[in-house]
Length: 157
Image (cartoon, rainbow, N blue to C red):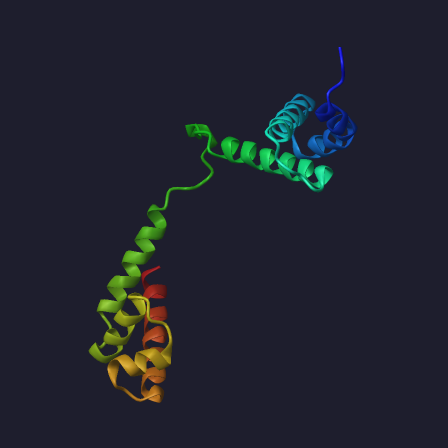
């Protein structure tokens, strides 16, 4: 059986690819599969006539891309109930509800500013522009509103 030009170019890369695949994969079998998939891809490219300037670098990039693809597939496996790591967020929701209720109890000028903050506007300068109030007034009302909220929430706790 005669050796083809493609295999003569790829065989010297196998030890280097194998070492790299072992570092990228969880087991020896996965590493061997990764190398085999990479070599098959390279064979197809070379037989199709694709011109590859730096075959070792191209082979390493192909191997890395295939490893990354396998990680993505593993990362999307369905979680089972006993694998769940997050705690229920009921307490967080209660805290948010308490905070929103405390904001509703603020005096109207402070509540209006805090409503804008809850809506996502956090810059005092932007709040000043939105309300037409001087920047110093906005800053002092926010400071008083936050102090009152701290007291109200600490009292509820």
